[in-house]
Length: 276
Image (cartoon, rainbow, N blue to C red; front, side):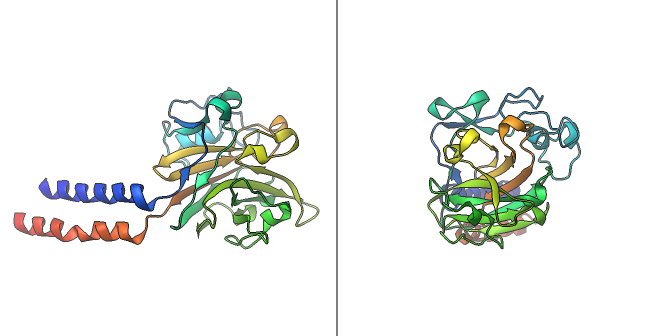
């Protein structure tokens, strides 16, 4: 039992150090809280709890996270009905707990993202990426810049996935800014290179009817790991299921964290030899 206790202590120490120093991906917006009590019952509350019209019902982002309804047994579901979601509070709260502005702290360590599911008629025309906090490109066509991992010409955006990539794609990226938000842009099906609409996690950057309306739902899978669900249509004409494109994104611990963990392994092995 002792050797397992030592091993657990080393793992815990490594994780503690990584959380304190290496992991840098954290929500930086004020007026947001993590809410762990929710149910996916398609009543519109929370704001992402709509009734999916383009997937077997019930099948919104909450059903995907919980692994129930139409997502029962789905291989990509985290199967966690208590995973907290990011909720707005105070001046940063919209209808049914919708956070108005959400952005994240970046850092020198790389992050890893994986495209989990796409359930949208526009899936082949959707582009998902990050942008410099508070500073979206003046020319929205930059949001379509490929290949993934490439900065737009103004240096204000970086594409992570294009819809044609499909589930299973992944990318390692380093945000070149101190803080960043997420975007979802839809390309015209008839005029390639033209953005039909674009939504930002800082919804004060949205325009027209979508000003201050949040098109992303964030669930916390770990200290610096998140599922990000998105809605690709104006909310007034959408099903609000936030499953149109779902991405898992996490910070990657730096090498010193793993060196600390590996440095403790000789002690574990020595204890095992002593007991033997």
